[in-house]
Length: 137
Image (cartoon, rainbow, N blue to C red; front, side, top):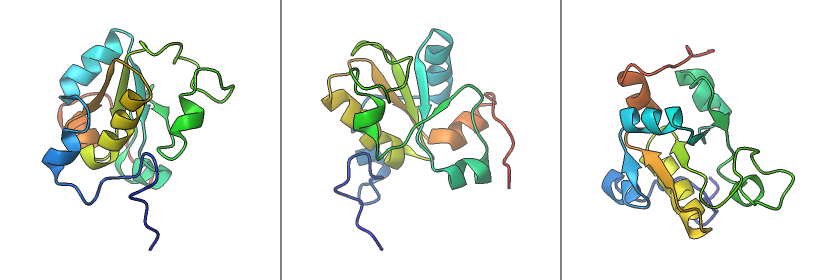
């Protein structure tokens, strides 16, 4: 098994849910959806297998938790187009806060000022009755 705990954006399996949630500000799924409705950039950092198995969020941009530098570098051609400044509001969702917490914390460390992640991740999003596509597999 590969040790990913030192890789940027790696899931924080070694942390409790509370510790992972505390890595960056956490919001409920409903609050996250409200932020997105107000223009926040929604990035889903779950794996392709995770999205296929559990479903996807319509309109979410798929992000690679191991490519944060490239995807969120304001000077890079590979950055996500909606990310135009360090003040861009960003909502990170994963399968749980263990996946989204490290990504949100890394973005905040890079200077992004309005980054939150979803408490309970995609399962909470789905449980809140928010838009979700059916699993593929």
